[in-house]
Image 1 (tube, one colour):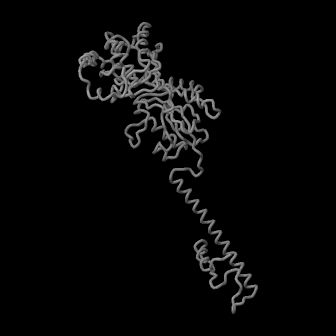
Image 2: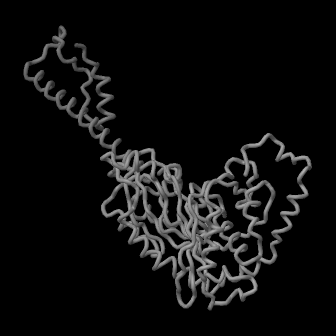
Length: 433
């Protein structure tokens, strides 16, 4: 087998190992002595030993180069935000509870520090606890982050669920919570399928709305009368009104920038009712619960607001049916303070993966007691104290007389028999109620 020239080998060894004794002018191994250049056996053996050491030095230099290259890669990886001992990422869901007062909603506004959100604090805690690299905190798509519901400004949650990819470090919940304020808690963690998306996989969402019962008192009564107590008869009437929301309706009047014929304005409500009242700090409160497949921005607050307007005598009962029609109805929006995301439902996911032996069902039964305790400690007291000091419900009730609910009915009647507007005559995106 041929052997490269010693001159070329010298160049390779010089680059790999630094200065060394050149072998120029000596014959390659395996070739007989040329005429006129006979050498003693001892000299040949000495050169063979020297060449052997040279080859060994070239191999050692190659190993040094490889180790240096690997170290450079590790340093580059660390500069990119990855740990040197890289753990595998796993798709999980976190059960999150928080009090929304002082926050501008759940969803993070990347690049804007003016309005603080729940996700700002959550992502910061994930990075500081070592669950995700810092660059994932800057670009949440890198960890496939998705929230189940995008709660509005001031809205709280006892059962928000977010999905993301993390490093499953030891004592992960304790470490995340140690970097969160007390009014934001991670209550549970579960492994899910790799393609799981908390928003798309959610079948339904349950919200509660906590409000002082004087909101249901007739308009002729003092709007700030804290001695008011909800009667059984009024509670039955309120529940009768709330029950009419059940089923599929066109809720374009209960949100903004939504046309009456847009298919996405159709929403399905599974249940809505008001629970028995209770007292807190001398003030009587009640909780309205509503479960639906999904809700649009401000939809629940407007659903509550319209029922309050009817119960107080500012609006006729038939305004409910008119609000689901194509005519524009001015629906009042109740304050955001009392709205709480209580629970999200994953029934279809649980049926398919909950009993496959690899994944847990997403029912959070073991975390219910902790979620209830969080509401009692952080959410309900905030609603009560804020209502007492800021009187948000009382102030909002004083604006109800400004709404002219009968004007929309007259406007709708005047449109009968007229040519449809361009929006109404555009072929229609879907049926309306």
